[in-house]
Image (cartoon, rainbow, N blue to C red; front, side, top):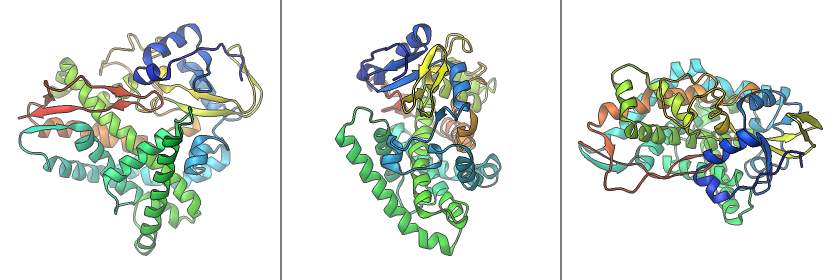
Length: 389
């Protein structure tokens, strides 16, 4: 264990709303050990930005980590040349150019298809019926698992992110994660013969065509599903909720004073869908008056970095016109999120503007309960009940 001061947290309270606790950590103990989750948390933006690039110390290679054990060793859990080679094969499918050339138009079509299923007026819960559907249909195309349902992908994603964040060792959570990974393996095996006969632009096709071993292909598809479903899902649902509860901000974007991309970037700064990234200490190291020891677990708290008062005035305020360039929504350094361009396109360019264009007088259902959010490693709304005319 590091020499960082010990800070105790109530896991339930931390999941309900981590931001007040993280603010206290940034102020009094920016690097601290939390026994309840068995990790040292780094909470200030500059410290995370520096340490994340120092992969010789803060290593993504975590042989005993939950992601490796439950999902297989993917490129996110590799460093250096090993990571670079795997990313080189994976990245072209979802690079900014490929997103513009291939996926952007498809995102529009898929989102329109989802909205075509809505009545001209009515009510619904946007989490399963819009955010989950749009995110899942896009992910089906990108991964190549077009034979499954978006509900399958969402269920598998949730089971995996719960599993890799299961630091309390709940056996039921682990069992659901294992079942999800087995289902994904089966779906990949189903699809591979067709992909080999008729290659396409999907990740499954591109990685297979490049000669990547099946074990690595499966691990990287699981990685893509785990983050590629919940992050855009929670960003879509959460950003719509944010605009509906901040009508002044909605007016700014509807009148053209701000862009939909600004909405996306500010929402992900304000309530980070992916709140942290784990690392393993590879060698003895001293940083910020803290002595780190080999093999201990460290969490880079992106959600805290995005509320760092040094960069963001009144960080708890949702303001789509603020400068978000210092935010670490997609990380930094060699492990910067490979799917950032696809997420920005799907959420900021398509899903957010489309729903306000298509559903007139969209508003939160006044008869429904207050919207609840959950999670600190991954965070999103549980329900977004809305009505429209």
